Image (tube, rainbow, N blue to C red; front, side, top):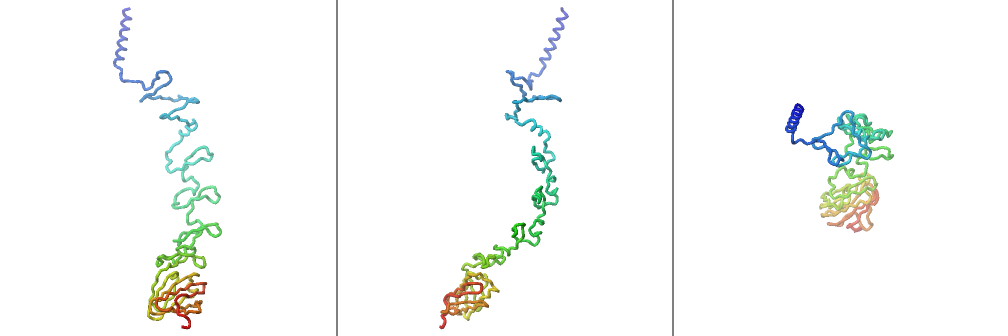
Length: 309
């Protein structure tokens, strides 16, 4: 009896000593919440599923992450197990051929000539068979072959609507074929020429001063007012239509600014005037007008010397 008591007393002191030396600040990382309906993994706690272990979420159950339910199916989650961005820099994501998922594709695997090497500034287009993409050197596109010597040219669909073609600016009605430059065309208007083949410049009442005794109108004089000041006799000769093709409807106004009268003449073509008048201006500050009626016929009107005077 005495021996049994001594053994009990020794065990008591051993357990007491262990209890007194344990960490009093320790709290369980995983515990069963009061009420019996929740297991809690506290900060620093974890659940370890060893090899062969399973966590089975039955139908109707789900995980939450930061309060949001994870609704992906098991099959969808399994895709994440094999998905990786590693070594996929520059890859393209596309729907696979079975239309069941996305897949990574190296750019060199896309059927556009196999590789992007040496394809700087190439054009990518659907091939003729409409089966794949292909890289095309711009110089091989059907617009006259190469870009060489095509500076300033336009590209348009050809008449047969079968391909593109280069067009020199002078071949189409644009401002670029109006003498090739804007120089000396300040305040000019632009209009379609008589043949309806191109645009042409038309002066809008611009004043042009001349002081010589002879003058031949130029294409830029269309719409101008030309003053001529000289004390001697002055002759204005209209060039033939074959030399200077003024548009039909062209008007040019002349003012005799000095003492010298202006006589009007024409080369090859016809210059008409009323039978009451001559083709000579009627003194200083006389104003007359030339108008082109057809390709080869002009008419002169204004302050002219009367016929028979």
